[in-house]
Image 1: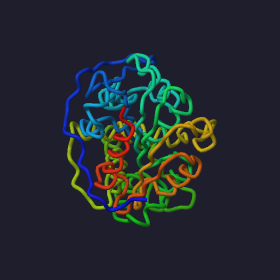
Image 2 (image 1 turned 45 degrees about the vertical axis):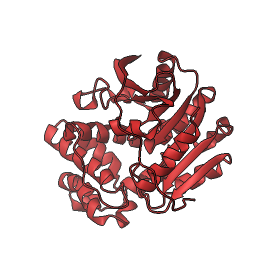
Image 3 (image 1 turned 180 degrees about the horizontal axis):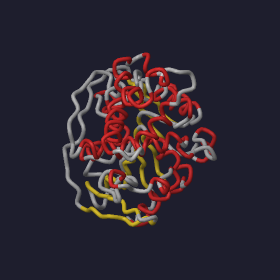
Image 4 (image 1 turned 135 degrees about the horizontal axis):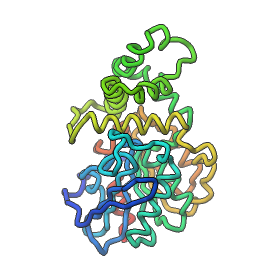
Length: 330
């Protein structure tokens, strides 16, 4: 459990010393970068969403004197090409494509083993990657556990979390009500995720952007314990289209994990050290997810932060993540 100690700030801002575009097949090229110490111990940052992309703030979770910090934008988002807003093919964007992409990146960069750091969807992908490639992972640092089970999608996208955020939920429902009417949206059996899939790919750019904004705003407005103003970064509509379309694509397909649920394969990584950090009041990914993962992973260390929600930047969460990455320094 979390203890109230003096909380640490992230490491100072640094820029990358090396960048590139990696061809992973299927017409996909991934943006990657390395920062910190070129001779340092490799650490891979696995971003959330899916579809969230990386940002300079992500480098600040690691000691740049000790780590070779590796960031990569997953298929269809960030600086990877083609971008979903430009019509990237989602048929070649699945969990197992992304797992294979991370392994290609490891080989491309000449990394033997690395620390893998993931948050939110990044925990799903980090765990799936580690379970496929346990010999290539030295340790894991995981924040805001998301196991991408149907019950978790039901909770956040089909009405459970609406009991805590009815005002934000109204905004999430608005495009669905406009398209299908309030009676249909409120009827038993109405599937919000499937309905959003239709709107996000309807062919009308204005409708697609409106739906993408509403989907993305629902998540961003519920992520922190205390509301924080959004900070625009680049083209917000372009970001929203990638974020909403990719997330929705994964969630209508149960993240392609039907053949390999995360908790059913924990024996593959039981020997690996791991630190799990989760906000007590995480509405996006309830803390029960972290509790269940920790129970299935006796060697893991769990920190439940008493004054945090889902966001990485909340002070208590940041503090424990920095402690974890410092612990795994060479």
